[in-house]
Length: 395
Image 1 (tube, helix red, strand yellow):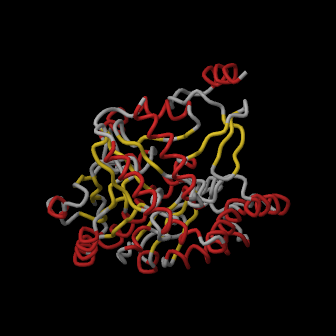
Image 2: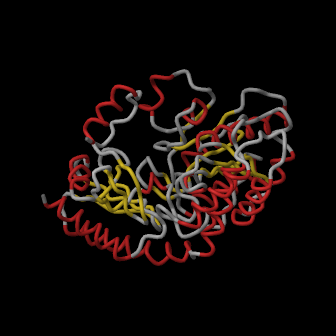
């Protein structure tokens, strides 16, 4: 039966993904089930989305209650969940203003527009430049793709938005070499995800912050994947105390409901986007905002950050031990519950074998297995994952 549904999907859906041969039907906790009832331990969580795990009753009940009240109004009117969501996200992020979007890519688009408007208001020029990082990933829309530092994603869709320069992550000299009098922003992921699980170094971020302050350049930190508690801090930059001028967030912000946001300081807000400069039909609708409110509430009630700070180091330790046992593993890196194993060969076969054995994993590039489980994962599930992965590598 599952094969029939897969065949139908292949005839109907645009083939932009090479999907695994499984039809998932339901989830519970940190496990997913296919339509034939097979259970899978999930260490992907919808690519860092389902931070609270599947079938969280309090989360589900909050969304059901909101559906019975109001789902959509448009942004020409205020709605209570959006006001509450804005208050809550400002509190946990330390930022001053928020614009709700439908996705992370849209949040990056808004951040780029805000940076260019900020610069335009200063000098009226339209040739400002943005510095991004090599091996970065910011999304698939044209603006987000333009600052994504992987040519293979961009080349078929050239020309991009233009005036983008690329520097190397954690190499401050390579950044300064790209700075000109037209530079208006520097954008980077605080921890690179798709690019191979590379955390920004503290000194690098501090130097970027100082450079931006000196030259009145806006620092944009992309926290779409690494934010929302994944590193043990609500946002990864808080680990270093290097506050951005603009920040993007999404994925676990809605824990499954499509929602994102870009946030900024009051100074940037007063000197960038104004009425008519930006908009969205669905962004910040009552249902999405209700999801944000409940997610942030449950993060506090369930002590999610505390769990990441406990289980993250344990996962890191077990992965390091695994790396030492197998010559085919080149290295291990990551922070919190965002970890990566770098192999000396492509990892597709290992991931497929793991799926057969009831473990869901994902890659980050051809040679890296990425681990981004639900943030409520426990040590027992880490042990179970390591046991399966160990056997797959040996096979």
